[in-house]
Image 1 (tube, rainbow, N blue to C red):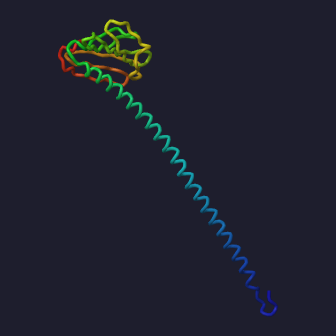
Image 2 (image 1 turned 135 degrees about the horizontal axis):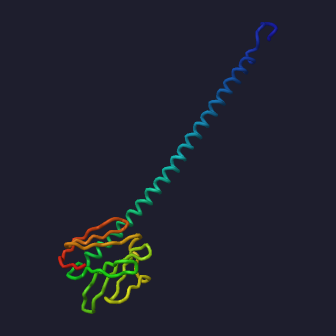
Image 3 (image 1 turned 60 degrees about the vertical axis):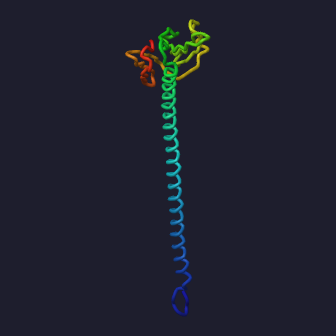
Length: 174
């Protein structure tokens, strides 16, 4: 207190006001930093979850595409050899084999499609030769392979689904 005026110096109140304002500003700054950190955390978690979901969807789509590709390949094999007496049945190592025959000047050749160790495989060989699954090419993964030929319609069934091929040649065989 000033002796002459009996009042407290302004600097005393000013220091307290400055200190109170400074504390509030510190709290405001701390709140802003905490809010920013929460925002960054939410963005990072969302990015991580989104990436995992996208990876899972992409993996499932790739599996679906692979199965469609395998079924399309089977159908195209049949269509490519569609002629009289070109579709037949053989005995593969693990059940029935779909045999697609090509009658050429140099002889008769077979494309044999059958199930072998969880894979549908394709083997190209001269007619009458024994099956050699270790030399066959993999078409697709599947635990089952069945086909049925009725009234010009060949139905192929695998784990990926079924495909029907209407043979252009009514005497397609099988």
